[in-house]
Image (cartoon, rainbow, N blue to C red; front, side):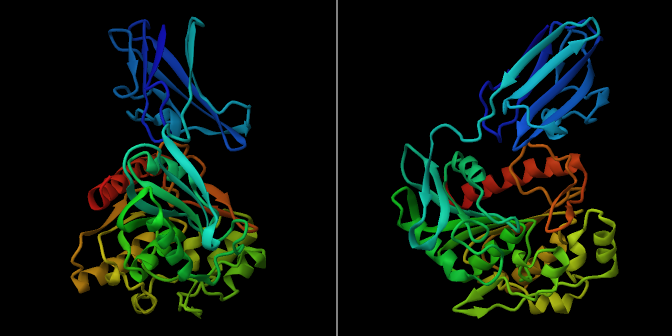
Amino acid sequence: MKLDVTPETPVMDTPLRIRLDGLVPRGAVTLTATCDLADRSWASSAVFMAAADGSVDLTRDAPLTGSYSSVDPMGLIWSMASAGPAAGDKRLRLTATVDSGQSAETYVDRLGRPPGIAREAVEAGGLVGVFCYPESGPPRPGIILIGGAEGGLHEPDAALLAAHGFSVLALAYFGAPGLPSGLVRVPLEYFGTAIDWLLAHDRVSGTQVGITGGSRGGEAALLVGSTFEQIAAVVCLVGSGVLTQGIPYDRGHLLDILRAQEPSWTWHGTPLPYLPYVIPAELERLVAAGEPVELRLAFPTADPDLLARHAIEVERIRGPVLMQSAEQDAGWDSVTLCEVAMARLDRARHPWPYEHVVYPGAGHAIAPPPYGPTTAMSGPGPGVSFAAGGSPAATAAAREAQWRRAVAFFTEHLGA
């Protein structure tokens, strides 16, 4: 029995081909996958029937039973579930076992940093970030990559995007050393400084850059794009075309944060108006019961006039816009919030291409690059856990699709 995985040393956004040969024709074989991610161990398992030639190919074959159900080359990866504390090995371990007890095993080192990508810490001008770019070749188009309500910066995502031919600044705007702890009164001028820094770098080509962000970072991407003329392309992922209320994490518990009435953004020292949170009875019930909270309940999206009053002036963006949202987003109603932006672009007859893609059955957690576990249906929040929504399979498919679409979008409109 031979277990073969190609490519041998893939980067994290590269799909794998997993194949078994030398099996008993029509015989059963169990494939398991394990790896460490962060401080947890993750595992999945599925049973397959060998073809008449004694092979199993995950690009061709669906499992009989297991942690996923349909033909999917990366099904064993996204269907991994948390299996306890980390075991101390970040490599992907694949094991094949048949009823006779015979087994085969292989390890795959999935590279978090693609080869040939350099990194540079950024601290100038009060910025907090990491700049990732191809070491060789000519200067590349610049992109600013920002995260959402979790704060901090997303260096691994920037490194993966850089490997597709870009010079990418992973920029923190709160929740990192030297920055505010919460998304409160963030000056838009900070992003202007980042744009200027990026365009001045000798590894960045052109006179304009792109910007991409997920969740609250998607809101920021649209807002920054509408504010600074040097932004030439915007990708908003499960974001919002509406300005929303701030997140003062120093208030402690979720309910205290929702009641705080703080703005997210300022421009020339003036707070920008925002859509205020609400605390409906169902949200309070979920908090009291200790159940995962659907934060979308805190956003009053049913009143189109209210949304319109706090809409971002996306028609001021001087370039193409791609918005991608999740049909079953429990974090907030990204579909409706992005449709507000679409309506403004329609009315303005925006002269550049723009599009809103909705992924059916997917939840809020489509923002990371593809090929990681999507089985965790909730995540930690301030004194609560947050529901993500959607199904693991649909969210995994959306992660892959949104990443490929975003890379293609920037390649078309910025060059790479």
